[in-house]
Image (cartoon, rainbow over all chains, first blue to last red; front, side):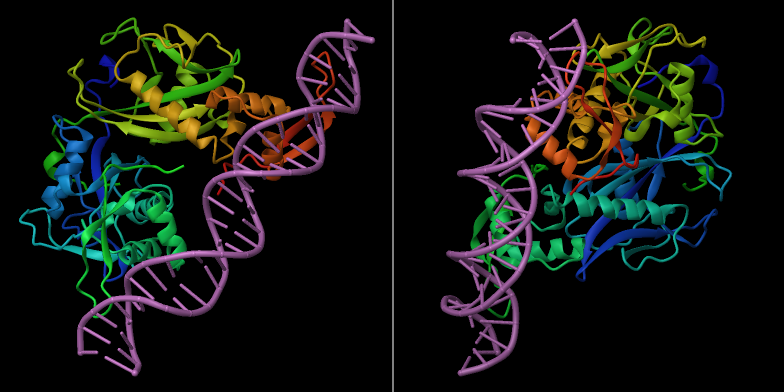
Length: 227
Length: 227
DNA sequence: GCAAAAGTGTTCCTTGTACACCCATGG
DNA sequence: CCATGGGTGTACAAGGAACACTTTTGC
């Protein structure tokens, strides 16, 4: 996308990595997938899954590869958007890296053993109870959570965190977890149904020990911004 | 910000560039600064000013350098935010480049001759009447204009396009240019003054041949999001 | 029959929108 | 005195927020 500057062709350049922030709701909490680093710098610390960007792949390809290789997540099944690009000079490492962060919403992530030499350990952490993290990853996660919090208010991205069919109370619970606030049930339903994005499926939820709830699905899985 | 992956240390990597999109209001239009390329690929085409990111500078430093070296704009005097990072594989060039785009608002940009060997020619173009552009720069500009258009509605970034002291009608005109819509004068004033972000300065505008207008300034130059 | 979640309307308040006339100045 | 842009208020509509009771089911 840029000039072929012959002056810089044989000069040292920053390396480019892609990190992925995979969020999911689990145990009534907003959680994120982290891996334990097996190498210095920050060996033994928890960090975002990430890969170096190769010459022959786009940033999106690299994000997809990071998902698959490092966490077993299939990109077709998740919501993914670019978050931000970080390129400060690192105090903790001599390498010079530019990191493009992507944020991902997954509705049913289950930890599975990854058979990759670069993945030591993988775990879900509540974003409210993070361990000590490598690099500037704590700040990156904060930025992503802020984005999620604001975007859920003016878009339908919540669909990335919900299963195909869900109860309105599931949806409300998801909003409440992310916004960390209790919402009014009647107003919530009025608003959501008024958006005309949901469709009742002809089934009822039979899980609960009590009155079964209507199940809904999103008419379209396309991301929509309100207002 | 990332792993020191020994496997990739001596492998080819994408190069990283920073491009800057400098917007200003001139001649009652939203304009952007472009430079004419002196080298292939796209020699002779207009393009966004940009630089390669060096090993010893942050992305922000690189953006600042691009502004100064390529356009004469001083970073202290402008609003700057990261727009997006582009990293598709290029069809038109064998080089592999990741481009971080920054968008900049300047309130009083005047074209000045730049004494840099890499700057052939510099000009302001209305975003509605762009020439044929190098790389994917047309798409990048569109994305930036969209961002500006939406962000001016829920933030005070218009201050980046206004001088220190201004008339409310100047401010309204700026909104109208960017939104490409006529706004109601009374509602506009009510809204803007209701935000409590403006302070009347004890002076009146003596330019017009008619009734002089009150001048205002922003109480703070900090960027604020509404809602 | 009781515990538990599902489902449902109305009132009030805030905010946005439409709209037209007088004012101050320079020439 | 006239042309030009500056400056002001009110009525209506729409959307958000507060708030409590009945329904359906499993046990």
